[in-house]
Length: 241
Image (cartoon, rainbow, N blue to C red):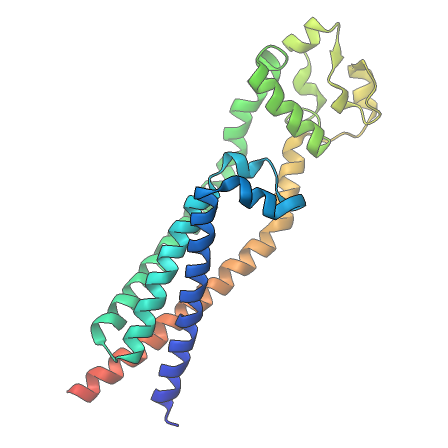
């Protein structure tokens, strides 16, 4: 078996897997869009409320369509030795790769500003809206309860707030690990309850290696796919000439 034949077979096999994966995601996406309740019932204990607010179906359909098109382009281009299909396959992969790199650069460039932007919203929210605005109160209560944190930076975000004034100097129970009611500033100061930003930052840092590894693996696969498609394209070009 020649090197060219081996590369063609590997490209057909790889893109066949991509095509099947796309068909699977497309099927799941249509299922979720048409009958979301049955999908949630199928997930059972793994389902959560987030699925009721995020239309997972559209995301699955969009990704599935892209994978199906990529699989078809790669398989047909390698199988029929079509320069145009191979070039189209290379172009789509290149566009996706450039978009991913651009997104990564934007995230790295603006990640340092994320904390400041969040602080601009969160600090006034703790001071003036917590306890009076039901929506903001529910969001902040859920965050503090789930993450076991207090305020944005710490308990001092509640000093001089409307909530403190309305509750006789008391803070939310989340600011005291013992869930004392009421939780005073003195008791909160004696307990090492972190601010919510620290918890969020620690969670992001723990997941950064996983996300980075997946992104690097995907980038390597994309580069390999572009190299293989260009190898076949150039080989066909030289053989025709």
